[in-house]
Length: 366
Ligand SMILES: Cc1ncc(COP(=O)(O)O)c(C=O)c1O
Image (tube, rainbow, N blue to C red; front, side, top):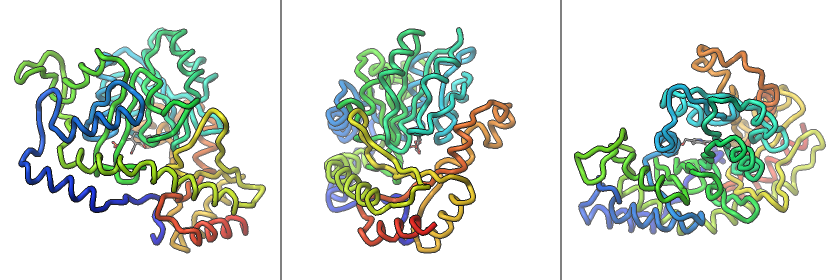
């Protein structure tokens, strides 16, 4: 695709720090605190998000998985989660032996619907994983209130939400725990990589041991863990990327608002922001009146080399794996409607003004 949906931007800063790792000979560090690059990346990321602790791991999936382990969630427990998300958000629940309970979304913001959330809470509910889909924050205040009322943990899936804001706070600083991804499509990348953020000292300590086999000092596992460590070279890339995040976010915002201005078709629902919730513009997602128009738009954009992409069709509960588990019968009408009518458009920093005009022209003509 001439204009991919997202693309990593790497430069001299990344090369310099990676070379420093290679010259040092320390490629990883299995101790509780990790190697020097990992420690620096964690400190700088925690400061950026505005939390006490950041724990680097080797993927966003690992960040979610470790979070569930740290909260002792397992067989017999239920975890509330949207189906309109990337598979990993639900898969980690199955991986720890717990049961995902799918909650419908709101068509206003494609995030978890707080009324459906409260309706689906049972005696077995232990946690909720709200996803800040496309980088737009879920209704965290309402979610935290419900969680407190029923004694649930909140794990924010902030894998798409680096730099998004909810009432002036960064996404990933509000729940008990939050998971970020640094996959190459994300706002900043380390290749593969993830981060857990929290203000809870005890959970942070527990997570540090979970990412290295539950050890404290070495060969002394006190709990079940795994190898979820982030290598030093990835942390080095992450430090350089974090140094540029302000510029990346500004450029995305600029592109998103240009596209917003050029788009002029009353049958297309555009994304929005308000006083409380600010996008990081990871994706600019529009919605059409029906699947036929959406699919036609996708085809026309692709023909012009624009990497427009559908996130997500099918939603998790309708994938073959979850269908086999019986989840396809769960009624989630707004999730299903969104999956048939949304389309995400590129607004990353490398998208040019002519590309934004071309995207708008194609969509305005539909
Ligand atoms: C919403 C969401 N959750 C979880 C993940 C998993 O992250 P990773 O691919 O780094 O494992 C991703 C990213 O791919 C994601 O977009």
